[in-house]
Length: 159
Image 1 (cartoon, one colour):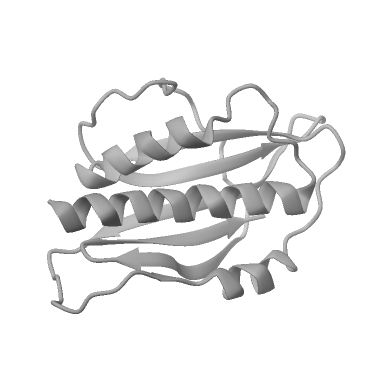
Image 2 (cartoon, rainbow, N blue to C red; image 1 turned 120 degrees about the vertical axis):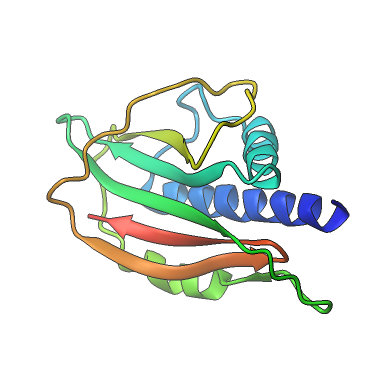
């Protein structure tokens, strides 16, 4: 339980930290009223710990009504725990990858969604929502963003 709790907190911080870096890179302000890093990290960590979280999704809503780009952070779980398992993150690769992300027009807003593998606990600040369609968008895989014992998070960029 101790390791699972640490992995969940670590992955939640890695995913939300990456999202904040992506938003800063795109020039999208975090002040849209719904961003609360601590609250959101607690919620995502709780869902990872209970293994209900499938993925965290960042949608960029442009002023013209289109939703692009979209960033998906799938979480995978493993029963394999190696005694010397360590926490790893690919922050240098994310920095290199950010250079390939297309810009967005001024006025673009963001929305976060989570999808689930199964029933999940209720968390403050989170409610059901509907994701935008990703039909017609191309997908690029970043690979593993961060990993720890029991779970890992990766990144897909849809554009």
